Length: 285
Image 1 (cartoon, rainbow, N blue to C red):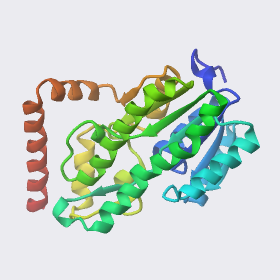
Image 2 (cartoon, rainbow, N blue to C red):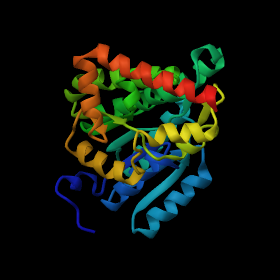
Image 3 (tube, rainbow, N blue to C red):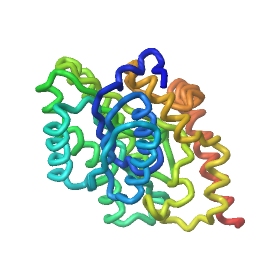
C-alpha cells in the first residue's frame, strides 16, 4: 500500500508492543505492519496474539508473538535482548499493557493497589529500564508509553487507575528531554475513551470494585463518544511519526484539558457533577 508522508519512519523497522493482543495494542500493531514495520506482539494472551498475527500476515505484514508478563522485569529484559539479537536493533518500544480498576477508593484493598501499580506503572518502567540503555547505545529509538486522558484529569471512581496514568505522563515527559540527548524519542499516548474490550469486560482486563450494572457502565462510556481502536491507531501513528510529546486523541479532549488547566474550579465542578450523576444512576438502578 502507499505510505503517507512521514509514515515511512515505520518501514523496515522493528517494534515491540506490550499488550499487543487486544484493544489499542492490537490496533497499533496492525497499523504499523501496514507501513512495513516488523511487530513483536508481547502479551500473556497468546491465543489472541496469534489471531492478531494471522491478521497481520493476511495483510502482507511481518510479526511474531512472544509471551510476556510485564510485571516481571527479567522477562521484559530477556525479550528486549532477544529481539535486539534477532533483528539487529529495536526502533520502537510501545509500553502499552495495562488494566483498569474501577470503584470507590473505600473498596480498594492493598492487593488492588499493588496489582494496578505492578502492571500500569511498573510494566512501563520495566520496558524503559530494559530498552533505554540499548537504544542509547545504538543512538536512536522511540519509546511510546500508553497513559490515558485520566492521566491529565481528575477521575473519580477510577482513582487508582488515574494515579498510575498520571505517573506515566510524568515519567514520559520528564524522561523525554534527557533521552533526546542520546537520540532517543519519548512520547506518551493519552487516549480518550476508546472502544476496546475493556469497556465491555472490565473483569478480564481488570476489575470493578463497586458493583455497577453493565447497562450503566456502557451508558456512561457512550456519553463520552468512544473512538474505534483503528481510528485511534491511525491518528496516533501520525503524531508518533511527528514526535509529538503528549498525544491526546480524540482532539476534542484537548479543549477539556485546556479548560481544566485555565479554570480548575470549573473543571472540578463538572467532574464532581459527573460523579454525582454516576452515583445517582447506581442508586436508582
